[in-house]
Image (cartoon, rainbow, N blue to C red; front, side, top):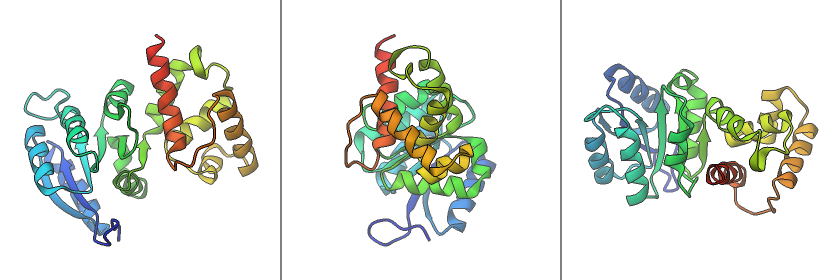
Length: 228
């Protein structure tokens, strides 16, 4: 069972206008022992319900009524502004790096962005929900690779090798060194070497923050945007 700091089941609100997908996500979460306290198919209603129920994390679609544009994303951004202690995990069928940057803003803690197809990997999906609820970050690897690819030819990421970019993408997804090694089929020692090289090339000093890896990626992506 996934619990919060108070020892009770994690409380989740779901925002999704597709009824079947919404019910499917709810079943996955409740089946894992989480407490789904609110469900909504409208972004405005989701925001109101979330502020009323104060869950640990919100799982929301980007495109929702009433406008069926980026209403879900806007609701999530407003929620982060008004209740920063609530985690936000966006599920989208679109690989849109701009949405990620808008959502993250200057604070990568407690935020996630996954493609909807990832929900099929139940273990990974639940891990992302739990991580975001705890104040961590969860970024879809496909989105991260596209974000990094845009910056690789110039700017702060230019010194990185293709392998280091791949390691950085895996780091941004939230993988440990062991996870990176398994994903890229390289040794743990090689991962450590690449990570050290990445931080050296990007001139990132050691810190004690547990979100250092994701913060580093997002910091330099934002720096790349300002330099355009």
